[in-house]
Amino acid sequence: MISGSPNVEGSTNKVLKLLEKELEQIGFETEIEILDRCKIGFCKGCKKCEVDLKCNQRDDMDRIIENIKTTDLLVLASPSYWGDITAQMKVFIDRCTPFCYNETVPDGKIGISVSIRAGIRESENIHLLECFEHYFGHLKIKPVGRFSLTQVNKPIDLENKKEEFKKLKDLAIVVKNELEIIR
Image 1: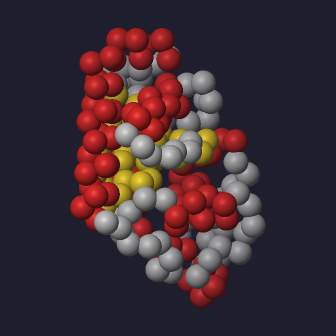
Image 2 (image 1 turned 90 degrees about the vertical axis):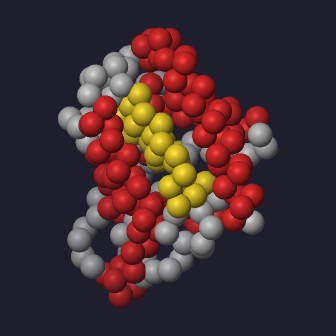
């Protein structure tokens, strides 16, 4: 699970912890990667990855990319900042450009998209979810679920979303079923 939230105690990370709990209850081993805690340089646009098939920068992306290669499920999560993914998530996605030139991501991976925003309009969250699914498409990861919350400005606002959290259990079941089909 990769969190683009810069707020370690924020709503996005709390939702990921709830999803993590649901996945662990049905037997999955999980890890949440908080991008704001990582040292990840901006993409330089040098295009060397087109030739070298990897980024020439050495930072925490090396470890994250290895984890992506070995995981069955990739969850991308971001709060909506000005109607888009956070800067941390954008840098992560940009640094995955070598995947577009290099077939190093094994087949059979699935993905879930998560977006949370303070405002009421679901359309902004849909934009983020579609961004994540576009990313999945480049890596040949099959999107199997989405989770979206609106009207969450502070973690305390999650108290009013208990009904929506039932969907996290459903997502965990979808993950289990999809992976059984793939295997």
